[in-house]
Length: 280
Image (cartoon, rainbow, N blue to C red):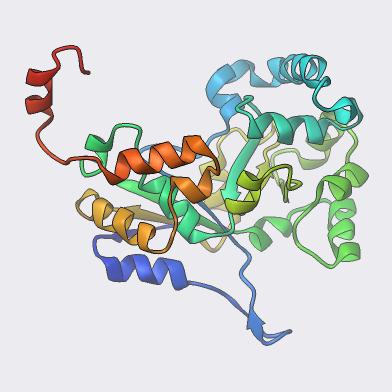
């Protein structure tokens, strides 16, 4: 089921950050939680492929991946050997895919939940951080996938281990149906993936409503709604933890975005429009 927790003070944020699981087997904290931050609490969990291609996503996905592989092979000639590699590299560069991205870090999720392209919106709408336990969904994996995880003594797939279990999208969709999905750690192809502590859920075509699936199949999924009144406070707190665009998007783009927000002047947007009538 999905539990909704409303957060309207910093104490609630600190509880979210420190909510970890204790592993009795090793006597240490080992969380199986994934987190995903969204700047609007009304945004639904959905893949970029589904948002881009709507109901035609299953039919258009192979064409998208073929075209990406054809034109991107100059940068990576090995792309044609793995559909999963095509998908993860494409997702990283903005290609619409069936991957739903998560992070193992609640701080990174809070960054995305408290970032806006228009800073004026930061205190105008509630944001959300999703948390789910990947072990919840692993219970429903077909046996051959469960065997791979047991063999590797892990609960997260790698590019190689997923390729061992399923060599094609068609095989994966047949195996999963609408009952399960795999969580995978992408290869560290650049510093951004490393810094964001990124992971993906590979959503099969049989699951068309991710939130409905999590509500029916999981026991520890939480939807943390962060009230608009504290979003600026949370944003400033994250900067104190060195969680900013400069760290999450290494390079000049991230630095510029971080500086733009740091020097942003809060105020009446109507006043700015009197200064610049073309501003929207």
